[in-house]
Image (cartoon, rainbow over the protein chains, first blue to last red):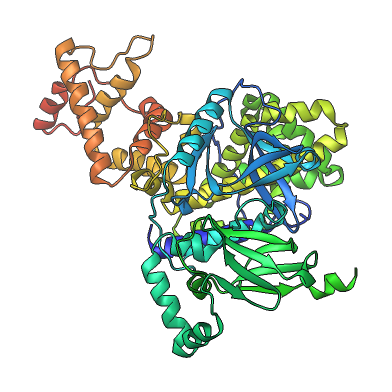
Length: 303
Length: 276
């Protein structure tokens, strides 16, 4: 798709995130109506609607309306959900595209979370998958999880398709941040490092400047640990990159950021996995991830 | 009088009775019997008014899509029709889930729920329209990324295609192009091809042999395919043209009993060529 088309689709996407309270009948455009003698005909379906698995649900997550596919896999009374979007033009290697009736959606395999029964009840079911379509999609999801992801996307985080992806994860941050046993979603890791590790590392080293590199080398004796005031980064025996909260800050409300992108928002747990099996020393990982913490002081002051 | 002026007159006359619940109730009725939208003007106006209220919730997105459509010279009324058509179609697809809610909720609460559902679906319809306007959907099918969204997929029926704005515009262009550039005897053959598939006896090409008719059909289909290709139109536009516009064109196309006879008449310089 040409770049200006991607930009205009991204403009549509941003506008789609807003819903307003309507005032009477909309009259933003003059003299627009249906064409004269328009023919109206439709196809009808007799499929029954499932109760949970296979429904497409709109729910409210903080300020955002989140559209999900509910898989029905329950865990501690919560239901597994995957973020979906009708903006199929931004599909990447992390997505599956599926049809529901006359609509197409992209299913973000890297953007999943759990909804509780109350959220499920309060949500709006705006579409659903017929039984056989649901079985078919489940198979595709299983196949996807078995095969390695073949990187195809570009690494520029400012590109419309990557801005879309970052925003989609921002929408679900409230849901994902309460799901502490999964690795966090980090744009610099998933959209840059996994797509083109060498140039990302080279660029990070160049961006940080020689002074910074010398400072890191001098301060960090152990390349597998990085210390900051509120946290430390460590690599465990499984090569997971782990964020360890300083005891003083455990339980406080904060945002964890990579660069200026928020990847976690909530009460800081004792530890969080940032990325699984990262074949890098911690100092190198920190060079391109630039993990930092922003304490949400106003919130903490109230407690 | 056209749709717009009739709708505005109705809206003004019903000013005192304007009630969202009334519009929502009409929309729910329309979803039970969608064919009534073509027969009952008041039901159509109320359902359309319901969409207009919901559109206010998606005002920002609508204005961006409208602006893209305007810049790309799409007809505004066609944009409205595609939006309305898509909305009803997708609400019909969600009808079973809506029915469950309707049984579980008091009437007012259900209408609120219907409003919320309509707003969400309307947003998805606007996204789809934006893709269609900029050709994003077609490109998705051609891309060689790691996904195969259209493998083994059944072609969408005319009821769905007619609300795809780019396909609709291309089908209308094809109709005009054929009207302007095709010879009457060629259109006669195309109409015979369409009409002879029905049960009613077709008077066109009555004096031609079956073998000739077979060849004429083959040639005319090839010409239609070539026209699509030469004019840069998609296959769906051809399908929509045949499914929606050709029948009306054929109603106004003179019935010719032979193909060759027309040619002879023309060679003789007969200005009424084609009339037999």
